[in-house]
Length: 194
Image 1: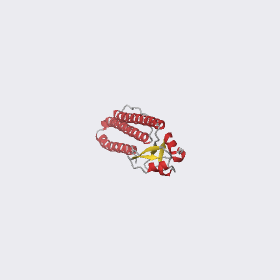
Image 2: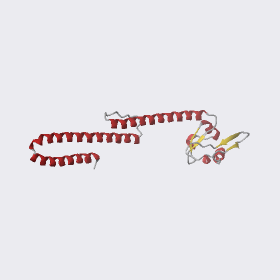
Image 3: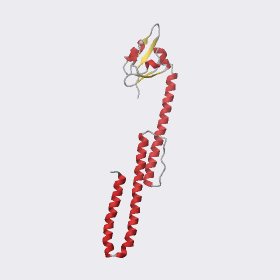
Image 4: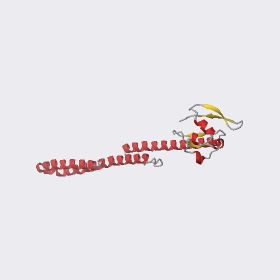
């Protein structure tokens, strides 16, 4: 049974009980009929108003939860005039604004970092937690002589380049000088970051 149905059942049950008491009183004191009817109307109106305000607050809370779950951060809620509901709306709006700003800041940082990595003359290969290549910059493509389309998603050791195999064997934090064909040498370093 939904909350709306339970609240309405309570409201109706309470008024049926009051009607029974009023019926007994009206038989003894017939002039009280008008006062009792006015009390019923006021009580029913107040109960209906309370049920609607509770349900409006719950509906707004449910809608806020749905929007956050779907990661829809562009929707702001309007205040309703009810101080309790407006406090919840204010918290939701501040939360969404904060999340949106954080998302934009993170995207800007990732965009900037991508440009720095791409412009770097140092070959940089980024691997995921499973040791598979997630990204590599143009300098790494040149040094390893690989195309990004064939390298991404593969472990370093499976690239078929001797340099890649030697770099793949490095432990985290370890660095070494690796000799290439001819007099060329490169420094390989395995760094980690979160």
